[in-house]
Length: 211
Image (tube, rainbow, N blue to C red; front, side, top):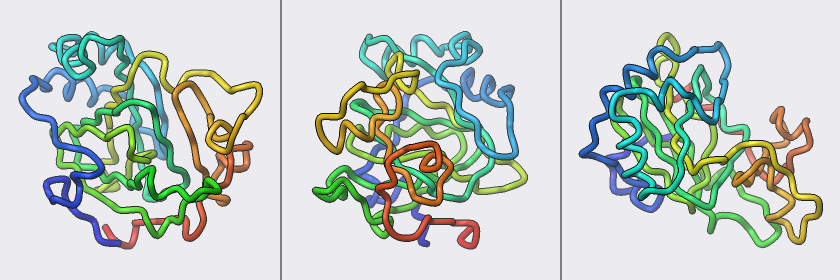
């Protein structure tokens, strides 16, 4: 799979590079968060919120709206799932990492998405990116297995916390997996085994051979 840098024009429909903010404090705080062998996600980490300039940066990123700074850390090379939110997500890491992305208009009328539509983009260490609300994404992938990744996940407050609708009015509603989280799982994923809608068709992409 071809892995493009986020500086490539091909990234523009999916997100943008965010500059101008003092992120040194956040980067330092991220290095102190856990690094599991697999992947682990924490929606909100008070250590990140307490980092130098973190509250000012978060307030600016979300235009004064309530926000949460959490992390997704570890090691990964597989797609497994794709998710989207009703808002942008901001990512930042002290290590380079790779995002596997698709677009909402890649979703077919029946709710499925062909994984052949997925693109890979590399985010350099220390560079913040905005992943648009119309972009499907999931756990980052590592560039260097020896380093793994410590990726900040900035989202509106409450996102990815416990919530499931009682009734699903349509296919989209049936994919709500948590608050402000719509999830399309690959049949081979652990999420599908837990009951997530298996709507990704095609290969469960693994970029290990492309690193």
